[in-house]
Image 1 (cartoon, helix red, strand yellow):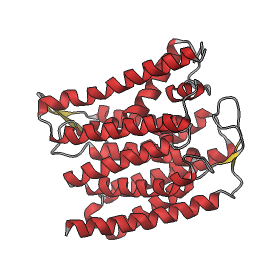
Image 2 (cartoon, one colour; image 1 turned 180 degrees about the horizontal axis):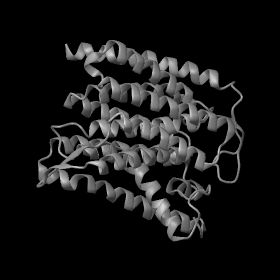
Image 3 (cartoon, rainbow, N blue to C red; image 1 turned 45 degrees about the vertical axis):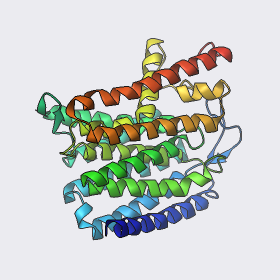
Length: 350
């Protein structure tokens, strides 16, 4: 019975992937063009806005979920607020693709969308920590949730600079998250991750290995926002201590790259809101590493995070403290490898 249900879910997601692909194909001729410049990796004008396909597939699927899958719904207030906030971030990001707004405008829109999600009550109220037990967070939980959603939304946007990197990473993360959520009976997280994955499956053939179209901000910000919200929902898996770490583990490569780059640029006295090409993945590509391999490295980080969260769910309390820290080791190795590549390529400044 479980197998037949999964096959039905898979068939539905396959149909959504086709919807996504059709919308992405339509966006090829929509006339929204990403023009090359000194801080971008592509060398010829390329259509963007392919993320509209991801958004349409997800929103269509979540509408069906809301109407016909009561067992997988959040409480109405949470559900409507989160979906409206996700839709709002998609609309604003699409307008940004058209008008190229300054970062401050984008940040304000992201913060308002995150506030919309948090205001429904979907935020961290308590966490279960080994050796400590349940810790009530109060207003700190709401503030931390707000910061988390804004940071991840931006992180996925920042990482979307090479063919297939952001979309592929999000797809791998969704696959593992859906698997773990099903095992915990977290049916909203399971279905929402599957729906986002469906949209990405429809988009990726247009973007990797050769990009006929880019996701644009509408795709990257939407993916980041949805994954961030799913991270908050997954933090409520009562049977798993420290379940708030599940999505951070899956996105460890993205979060590390963005955090490392922000800290490095801040220490160097650079303006953080200024566009640049100093992310680790960008430096690796500028130093001569094939873009497909850079994307594959980040897919590998997400897959490794997936294996870690599977182990994490079943690990005893004392193991849960250390397992996520293992994900720092490949990040440190990657940083050292990129630094070596940069030095060999004569990139004195990142």
